[in-house]
Image 1: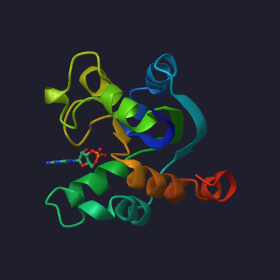
Image 2 (image 1 turned 135 degrees about the vertical axis):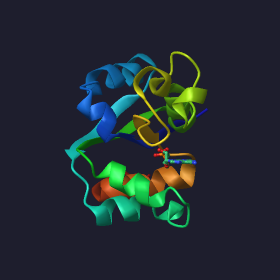
Image 3 (image 1 turned 90 degrees about the vertical axis):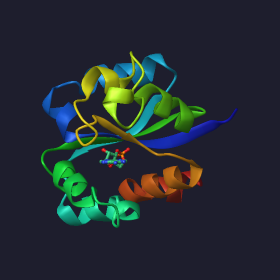
Length: 142
Ligand code: CMP
C-alpha cells in the first residue's frame, strides 16, 4: 500500500444538488485528504480535451454537453491507495449498478448525470492532475 494522489470531479448534477460538502465528508471520513481544489465552469474545449480518450465513443457528445451544463468542483485527493479507494467510494459508473452507500448510489440519477468522476489508474491520475493543476506536478515531483 502506498500514499497516492487521484483526481476527483464533482459533476454539475451534484454541484446543483448542493451536496459538495456531503461528498467531501465521504472522502474525509475514509482517509482521503483534499490537497487542492477549485470550482470551475468548463468550456467545451476543456471538457472535450479532458475526456479526449472517449472521443470515439457514442456518448462523447452528451458527456461533454453535460459536463459544461454547470459548474464542477475539481479536487486532488491524497491518501493510502487513493485511486482505488476513491473508485470504491464512488461506486459503479451506472448508478443503477452502484453498491448501496456509494456516492453514485446515493446522489446520482443516470450514467451521464453520475455525480462524480475519479481517475481509473496511476497514469490517468498523473495526467488528470496535471491537466487541472499543472503546478502540482512541477512542485511535488509526483
Ligand atoms: P466518468 O467516470 O466521468 O468517465 C466517463 C463518463 O462517460 C462516465 O463517467 C459517464 O458519466 C459517461 N458515460 C456515458 N455513457 C457511458 C457508457 N456507456 N460507458 C461509460 N461511461 C459512460
